[in-house]
Image (cartoon, rainbow, N blue to C red):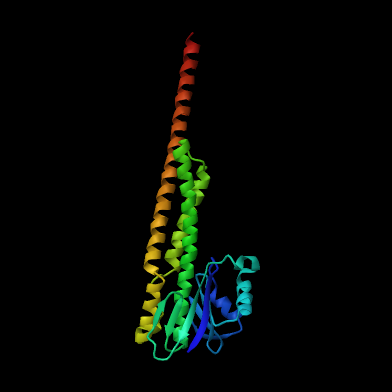
Length: 259
């Protein structure tokens, strides 16, 4: 039996796969425009996904730290990056399965490493999106509580518009970059790889978490649209009073001139 450690991080920003292949001095085992799988040594890989995830399989901590610093340039940020880890248990004859932070496989090939790395890349990306959405949700919750207590909004129209912008950017980034049900092509010709991918999808609860994020994004957007509508109504009311006042002044002026 062989046990390998694996850990994934999400940087929060996209990674240029083209530039990474030029900068990193490792053998490129598999690649396309969206990912690169580098072989560091026997049973040791680094996986980069273009939407900002890095996965290390059986890679020493010092090398992990060096590579993370290559992308973020600030050691103090590493500990705050969304991360997740799995133990890969390689045991002859075992059926592929994943549960409680462990993945069981009968062999550890490049294709197996690819399937595991892609799933780990997706889960830390989901963690990052979930954290960002929860932050937006908490902000709108505070604005709602203030509106309930004071009968007015504590945020300016500009701040509300910026929050709407953040929400739309986040939603678009998920739609463009995070294919939550994405699977490597190699699984379609291999029953064990297909089962491994299915097992990891289920264990990491991709569907439930993705639906939760989308629901929270919708709630945030609806709240912000309501806040903006309130502010626009307030602005319209102010303009109406200004117009009424101007008309009144004009009438007073006419009366004065007739006297």
